[in-house]
Length: 444
Image (cartoon, rainbow, N blue to C red):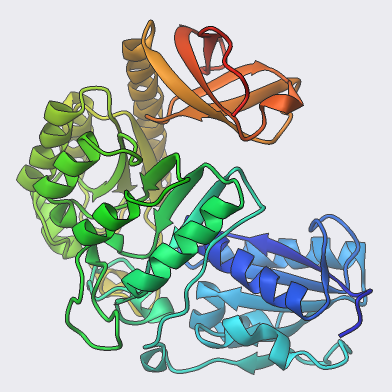
């Protein structure tokens, strides 16, 4: 490949997608490509798609259109979950040259020849049953935090979810390789690693190509905590039924793991949890939140919740709202249910009108603002450690404390990727927290 060729990437969706985009980008670099911003002129544009995002097809078409504005002759490639689920649909979009499925995306450069645009998008997509091997990934260079993939796929059968159809069975990286990747990240001077996967609490299943667990998530946590040079380790989303007491207890005393958990709930109604085929009921979720707060009173707890699932009556929605209002949590990620073909919920009765879904979503987003504000207020006057990000946003630099409080201070590039001890002082009008440095330590 010519060293003059340029490639740009656009990632939709989750932290897992970001880790995989970064790995794919390194493959391009090894082939002599120069990575540029997506808003720049490039020879190749790679779009990593998501099947969870509402209006995925509309968003994809808009991104393609923007890429072609930069270079009408660019070679456009679609990868990711939506590309696996609906490859022909993406290939039919004007300007798309190549669509790669779940296994093919990691060998993207082998599908590229002279970058001549195709009259019709070319599809290379496996049957999802063939996605039974593991490809390790991590993001580096994109942010001050690194996303480290430890697991892929899912064996759960939630009635609303297409992820098992897009990513295949649950399988894990080897413990040895996860630790190797973590050490590589630490050697680059990155101070925070976020563990990511589809169902990371299921870590260890399929580690060596078989169904059984060779290791557990708790064993992974313990081994990662021993690595020198990692200042922070953060657990991304983990199922409540897989978050064990021993993991919570270990995090509370850990050298590196921070007091921040993101735990999907989806509904506060046992009736709907059963319809969703979740593997827990509300009692389990309450127990996990209470256990975390007992051991880590200042821990931040984020919650995923779906509104408008089939059969969600006004009464059942209020059951969820009141449950979350009373629960000691810190913020919500609210998802409006949208029908997904080839899922069980697609044909369920009790469809909730779109305007009602939107109203309920707005109510829960409002609750999230209230919850986050209350959590931030509870931390005022406390001492924390902040890691600063690398963007100048309207004259301010932002950072996150270990328990995920977002703070801001006037822009100072020397603060980027440094850790500082601070005292949280006040909440600003935009909902971010101001602070004071403690003895202004030397930059780390």
